[in-house]
Each structure stands twice: as C-alpha cells, then as structure tokens.
Image 1 (cartoon, rainbow, N blue to C red):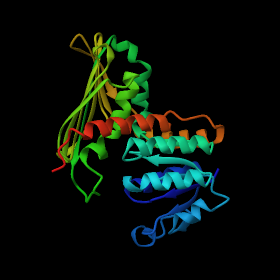
Image 2 (image 1 turned 90 degrees about the horizontal axis):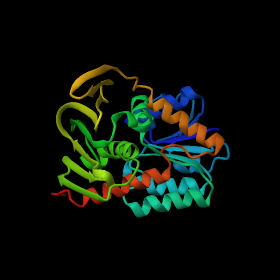
Image 3 (image 1 turned 45 degrees about the vertical axis):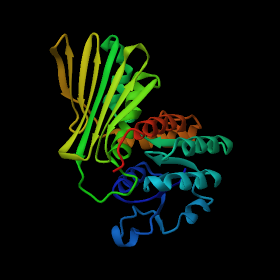
Length: 296
C-alpha cells in the first residue's frame, strides 16, 4: 500500500508524521508545501496538484486533510480514480453529498473512512465496550470549548469544527440515531440537544469563546457515571455519587490507531469502524442542528 496525503496543514502534518511512521506515506500534495513547510516531506514525493496523486499507478489510497468545502469534490475524484479514501471530518457539508460519497465508494468497490479520531481513543473504546456497567443509560454530555485562536474558513463554525467528533462518539455510545434534534446558539457557540428512544438524552456544547481548551465527556447511567476529560486524558467513575475510581487514560494513541485502522481496512477490504455510513449519520445530525443555529 502506498498513500498520498492531500493537505499538509496543522492536522495534515500530524497525519503525515503518523503515516510515515507506519511506512505507507508515498506522496504529499499541497501547493503551499514549499513555503509553509520547506523540506518537511518525510522522504515522500512532493506535488502541488492532486492530479499527480489521482493519476499515479503506485498510489492506492489517499488521506484528505483539506478545508471542509473541498472534501466532497476531492473524495469523489479520488474514488473515481480507484483510490481508497480517508477523509477528515466533516466528510461533507450536506447529507446529500455524504450519501453520494458512500454510493460512489460502493460503486467503485473502494474503502471510504471518515476521520472521527475520537472513536479510536482507547478510553472512548473502553467506555463503549463497558457501557453496560453504567446500568440504564440516561444522559450523555460533551463540553468542547477552545479559544478562537486562528483564522477560520467560512464553513468552520463551532458546530461544524468541533461537534463532528463529539456527535460520532455520542451516536456510538447510544447505539442509535436520535428521534429529535434541536439546537441553540450561533456560529461561535452552539448547543445541540438529542433525544433518543428509551428516555436517553444527550447535550453537546461546542464553543470557540472559551479562554482555554476544555473537552469533557460525561456518561450518566442508573448505576454509574463516568467523566472523561479528553484534553488531558484523565477520568473519574462514580457510583451513587461516590468516587469509585480515577486515573489517567492513554489518549495520545488515538491518531495512530485511526491511521492503522485505515491501513488495515485497505489491506483486508473490511469496512472500518468509522466508515462512510457513520460519517453520513454525523452530517445528518449537524445539518439538523445547524437549522436551529443563528447565522448572524
């Protein structure tokens, strides 16, 4: 397997490092590469046009880490060129586009994976595997805040930038789609309210107004409540209001595990955990929540 990375900005450079460590990075495509990151190509071929990647008989897979508004076009072109694709979140900006991407992957018999990296976090995986220990699941809450510390594109609101990972985790833990989606807020600070069958509810708060980084997952059940602080990797589990256990989780491995999962899917032809269908579900929730959020 040889992989081409399309986009080598803040997140793409991390993907480049990990895919290079795994030993599959063959090409980096980024028009700004020569000025932004001179010499940092990890020994891979550098190109300034995606046609070099899509037209290469050596490259069998691509990872797309470009602005969200480009995901649909680049993914469709890659799939039609016969490449397996890992596309960063959100996979598309409309559910129609997301479904088209899944259909295209099926038609060309290609792997389509979405970069919902939190679903590969060992602590999140363990939470999902042990969800029965919480008893009857009652409420899931995610608080995700950070400073608006960089220039963002027109499609990078708090909702679309921060919430995709959190929605993916909530849907995985709930094991179902919500029957009701509501939202409140604006482009910089938004809340999502989800209602599921069985009286399960979820609240997600995404904010670019925080003075510091915060990313916390709370899973409340009839028997136990767990709080996982994703940003610093600490967790606490409570039973009847009393602290039962606490410690540090290994969360820094998530990105490598995600990249390894993509390589494995490409080699085995078995769909990954965060396949295209899971990406569609996340975009559907984003779309429904976004209808409630002020665009002013």
